[in-house]
Image 1 (cartoon, one colour):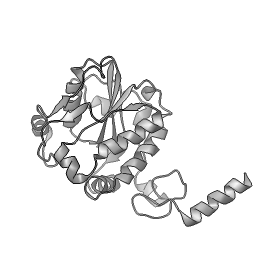
Image 2 (image 1 turned 45 degrees about the vertical axis):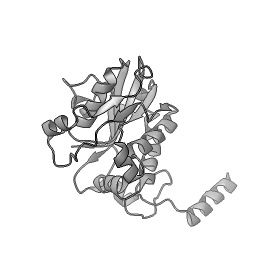
Image 3 (image 1 turned 135 degrees about the horizontal axis):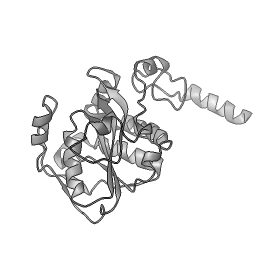
Length: 231
C-alpha cells in the first residue's frame, strides 16, 4: 500500500489531474472540477430518480423509461463554456472524460442496469466531417464502456443538415426536426431497451424527433441521457 501511495503521489506531481473548466489542479484524481469550480457547478441527482424533471418535460409527448443529465445548464455558465469547447473548439477529450465520470455514477442507479443498446444523436455526415467527430458519440461511447453496454453509431442516422436551433423556440425546433432522422436497421432495435445520448436538453425537440423514429422499430423502452439539461 505504501508503494502504491508513493507511486500515486509521484504521478500526481508529474501528471496532475487538471480541472476541465479552468485547468487548475483537482484535489481528487476522480473529479472533473477543482474545488472552486465544484462550488459553482455540482452534479444533479436525476439519475437516482426514475421519474424526475427530465422525464416530466416529455409527459404527453413520449413514454420514457427514465432520463437523466449530469449538470444543469445556464447560459454563460461553466457547463455552457464546456459544451462550447467540446462542440466548436476541437476538444472531444472533455466529452470522453465527462462520459467516464458520469458512467461511473450511473452504475449506482438501478434505472440504467437493463439498458441493451446505447445510441448517440447523430450529426449529418457533412457536419461531422467538418468537426472531425460527433460529441454525442464520444460521450456515449464512454458511458457504454462504464456500463458495459453495447454501443452503435450507425443505426440512427441524420438525413438532412438542419439549420442551427440556438435561437429557435420549442415549436420552431420541432418543425426544424421534421423528417430529419431515419433508421438504417429496425431489427437491431426491436424489443430492446434503448438509451439515447445527446449533449444538452433544452426544448427536447431533437431527442423527441429521434425517439419517434426509434419507436417505429418497436423497442421495449427508451431512455434519455445528456451532459446537461436547461433549467
